Length: 95
Image 1 (cartoon, rainbow, N blue to C red):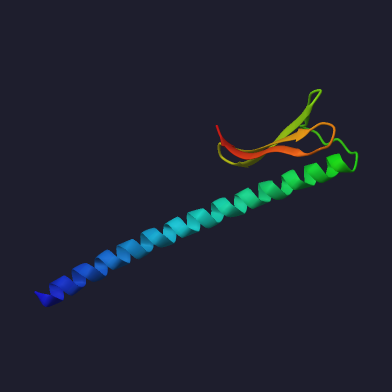
Image 2: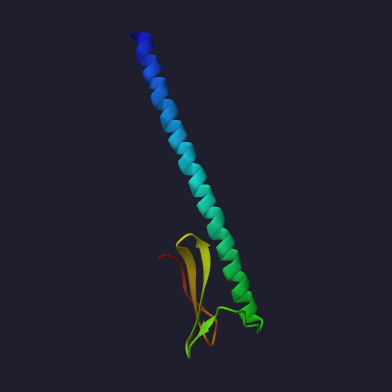
């Protein structure tokens, strides 16, 4: 009976450890994808500040907007003040 209990607890522990590992791996991938998109958005912001106008920019009288895909149905949306290039929005959006 004691051996059966120990085997049961060890299997439950193994199952929980595998689930934790899978979750941690998925979160690591999501973070890598986000930071890659964040770096791309920062590069676009830098180009705007130096006077270049990269493709994919939407410009109105007061707001400059662009988005960078993260993965699947997620993207990083950025809105800037057209005059000062101050960040108004820097947000992950799920479609």
